[in-house]
Every structure is written in structure tokens, then in C-alpha cells.
Image (tube, rainbow, N blue to C red; front, side):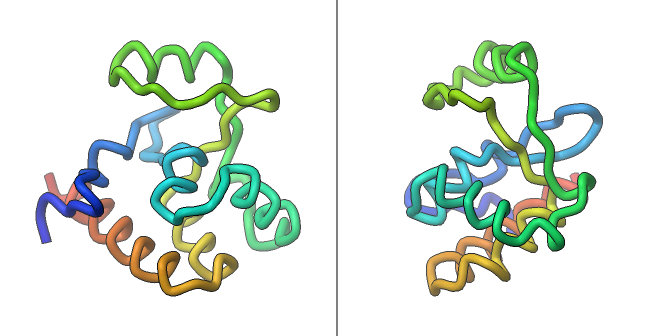
Length: 119
């Protein structure tokens, strides 16, 4: 399924490359899952065993500013910095955010990663 759109948001436009990995920002995921960003990070902290380093990491202020300048993002600031999730991290989020929205959004995100990997 190409050009996946969820509520007028093209998910592919929310997948960035940082440190050679395709990732999504915690704030973007929170908007898609219709929760606060802090809820995503709380869920991860409660389930640390499910999130090895290869599933998520914090980006530096410089990396975040680079994203803002390259993609004209207008994400809110964060006192602790932004967390980004790899494809595997997004899949794991779906297992801990047990809602119908999380399930359908996660499927759309996985499809977007597949589409981008084929390009």
C-alpha cells in the first residue's frame, strides 16, 4: 500500500534517517497514537526489557535541530530531549499501547516502513 495517509498525515513523511537508521520521533508517534508524548515514554520505561538499544535512542539537540531545519518540523520542545524509535521499536510499542488506535496506527506505520524500504 503506497502513500499511506492517516488523518491527512503521510506517515512516510514522519520517518527520518538518523545515525543510518530509519526512525520516528516520540512526539510524532504520540500524535498518531492520540496520546501525550510522556505516555509513550512512560510505557517504555515500564517495559524496559522489551526495548533494547537497537529499538530506540535519544537524539542530541543538534540532531533534532537538523531535523527541524531539513523537514520544517514544528515539534514541541522537550526537557529530556527526543526519543526516536526504529521500526522494531514501533512494533514493540504496539504491544504495550493496547488500544484499537495503537493497533491500526501501528499497522499503517509498519506498511510505511515496508514501502520506504522497497523504494
